[in-house]
Image (cartoon, rainbow, N blue to C red; front, side, top):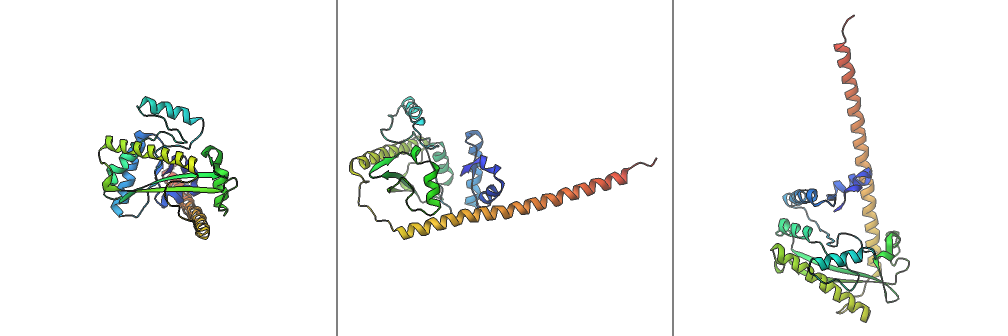
Length: 252
């Protein structure tokens, strides 16, 4: 899913649309029906997919943290001690309701960036770090380590009632808060760390950059086809209109 505003980028938007991305306006009154329709198309064609969901709904910034904590208090929950925003569960409940039989599991991922064992806030990373990684730098400037914790939840172990599912999501975020505290105290997530193959990361980075290039090229191709069709359609309308004017032109 991506922001609806990206539709204005014609070349990119055509590439995203042809690859099955879901455009969202962040207005639940319109997004709900659109998501249901999008999921229906995926299930109808039995398309393989991975649905990535960010329940927090936005990037973390220091300015957003107080508002999120205040909202959590109003909802009857305690604020998180670490760099977490209160999760919104409407999208999760909808996805679970509409695609439960299609999704085998939920992978809960917690990602933390550090510089010399000091946790870097998302607000300090910005787009420069992402751009550096996309350009082929395995470790972006200002970063020394990336910690990733993955917890697999089989779909049959997740409650199916809306209220219980919301509570389950809150419990997951409580666990995330504990994971971040553990990382601050020990320098790593609990459990045995798995070494990372830098060559594999480099290959993955190149493949990701290649996929973005494919999206751009394919979108450009679709854009050219669209403009060619629209140009031909416009010319046909102009010719047809001129013929009608000539045919209906009264004699003086």
